[in-house]
Amino acid sequence: MIAVVDYGIGNLRSAVKAMTTVGAPAALVQDPLELQGATGVVLPGVGAFGRCAEALDAGGWRDALIEVIEAGTPFLGICVGFQLLYEGSEESPGAKGLGVFAGTSRKLGPGVKLPQIQWNQLHLIRPGSLLPAETDGEWMYFVHSYAPPVGEETVATCEYGGDVAASVEREALFGCQFHPEKSGPSGLRLLGRFAKIAEER
Image 1 (cartoon, one colour):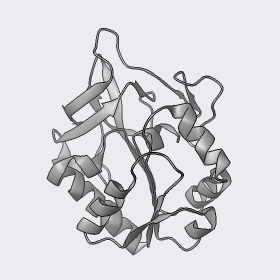
Image 2 (cartoon, rainbow, N blue to C red; image 1 turned 60 degrees about the horizontal axis):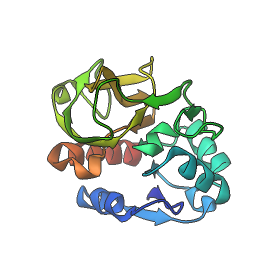
Image 3 (cartoon, one colour; image 1 turned 90 degrees about the horizontal axis):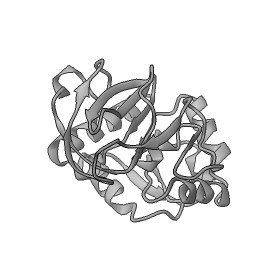
Image 4 (cartoon, rainbow, N blue to C red; image 1 turned 180 degrees about the vertical axis):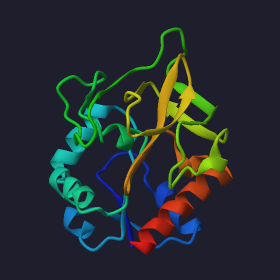
């Protein structure tokens, strides 16, 4: 089962629906103990970074999520769930992310309309398991005002007032600033690849 973390943030059912559309056995989980035995974990997130970080702590999710990541369980962070993989965000000073990757999310820009709410094109830095070479140039749907820095883990960027980190990959750990569940066939193909990785682990 692929566990979609339900920590009280936004409508998470679209992520479950998208996973089941690609044939993956996925379900919302509301207790960190339910992550035990999951073949994959999806951490969505919408809204403010600080509110999401607080919800992780309130539900006792922080240590459990770090544990499954360190165990090598396939893990996908989406939107703010992607930003939570980093140390923090200038959107919510003092709020702590999971700190799996170094860096702080910062406001997009300058000179761009915020938030970025649009389809934008991926520019592949290096091919990966979720974004193989043929995905270079694909369009995905973004909704955000902040983004983490481009680093060694970054596999794809988009252009919005400069290069914006769009996706990361390190072994079985993945993150997407865009919403694959809202990105049509391209997003579903990505989720299908994640489901296959989870199945084969």
